[in-house]
Image (cartoon, rainbow over all chains, first blue to last red; front, top):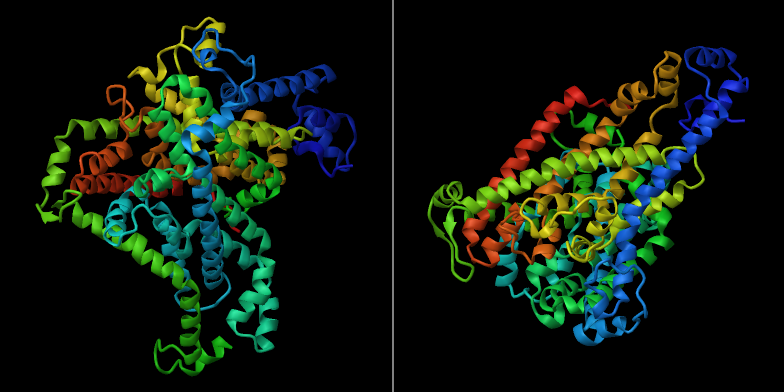
Length: 315
Length: 310
């Protein structure tokens, strides 16, 4: 029996609490005294209502995805009709092939991976080192500098991108992926915060034991702390992968060579350079840009939820 | 150990012991990637853009100092003022709406049902999808002649507007679309709701507080730090709102500049009109506005935000 069902918001659970005598009978009687006891019918009704609301809201979140898939399988003459067609007939699977033929979608995938994979590696290496420096090494001035790290979270990208563009142009980095990759090797305030919080939770005794054994900070970092950080590292890898995969502004500014476009930039280009009659295969390309993220999400759902809890700014 | 060393050297005021000096060296070497990145990608560009904002700087030329001329021109630039207004309009609706809808969805999920993981997934998933892709789909859904939004409105007897083709309805369309990405905030609120101490809720119930009173007097104060966090990040996000408007209007701010956001105009100034100095002045005005608003919210938060001492 649960310790105290009073607190649950679920109407059916609360109905139980007023009929069953729990450990503290005073609480139960006070509760009955204070409110009209619910009947079974109203509880069921409330529950049904809640599900009705949840399902209606789900439609708002699911219809765009359904519409994306449905449009990607239409023939050109099914695109601009009223009423809109929900399920295309015949189903045009070949739109997915057209996306590869007409717009080098395969090239975009390769390009995107050329940015994404090094970025994930960069984020993992740099942020674990930095997170350890802030989370587990004790040194004077550490917390003041960490304050600066947090302050940079509110620094908007529009204030920095113009001088960065000028610099990257002057050193010949335009139309390369270096402006997108190099910064990931130099830390990110959000991931630093996440890893620092995670490392601070690790018991100091573990580290002190290693210190007594004569290990220096680098060995402690590599052999004691790093293996314990796997859940946090998974979160960083996942978020960075999605961040790089989805990034539009960076490639837009730094990459203009048609052969070097990433997926996000590529599909935006398709949409502006082909007419509406091409929309079905463009939607096929769009869905192919989304599908890997959906698949990744279903395999790593727990990591996502953990990640949000880790960064859920407690206290 | 460090403590003992500090004591021995306490005669010489504020002198760091050799051990402390070594610990600083170790600490700095671990954070050295951040120091490089901070200086190269944040401090330098911040000051460089401030300098550029006082110059005439064609994208292929070199900067020439012109004093405050860029800022003076901004005040008389109708498109700049329009873009400020558009961004303010978007932020004023999208940020509070995102907070309210986020909390409501989190409250709905914060009940003991077996279906919770399913709905949580449904609400969250759209928020991690590529923005370009979602913008393309929503643009198609908002199509007045063949889109499903007006079709669904039609089905319940409403004659849908022209959405992205109409100067009045283009921004509301963007705001509606922004709610599709509310899922990550929902999960943050949900985590906060689950942290609300049960004793507090029980105490309120014992005192005869109804559901609504519990919500306003217990739940909201307890999750207020999270609301502040989402308010500030939402504000910063809204000020940088770019990709959706860019993709849906081809970077033009159509129709009639109604979707010309600050960041879109800034981008146009730099990369269509090639005026680096003028664009930098815009960036600084926007930056100062955000800085002032953020500080203001932090100040006000002392009155409205409740921090349970942990």
